[in-house]
Image 1: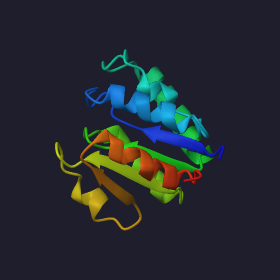
Image 2: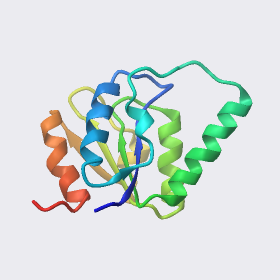
Image 3: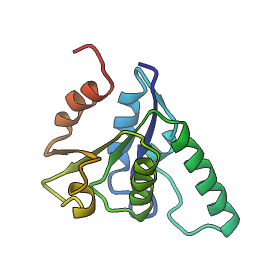
Image 4: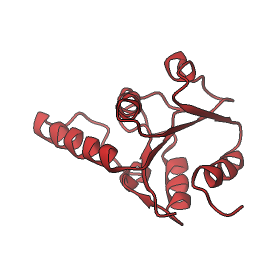
Length: 140
């Protein structure tokens, strides 16, 4: 309870799952702190930014990663940035839980083959919430 969660999901790689991100973030926020609530915003710019803005994003996000208790990632939509965040979390010994919709995508072999990550495939959104309850140690 009251863990700091870094939620990772695709931004510039595509926003097809933004509504799902928003629902998952809202669910996590019922008991815990989500450092990256903006991932669930429906309206986000997908365009490249200036170098200084991107530098700010990198510095802010890596600071959040270093300060979080865990990373929860939705990886159905491939994203270079999310891949980087996952590797960063592993390098800093931060627990990582990766969800992906196995009915519409394949998870990268680099993620699936890495025993550090907890990979949680699902076919319907309803399958995600009991898994989140376990991760967040909610009373079941």
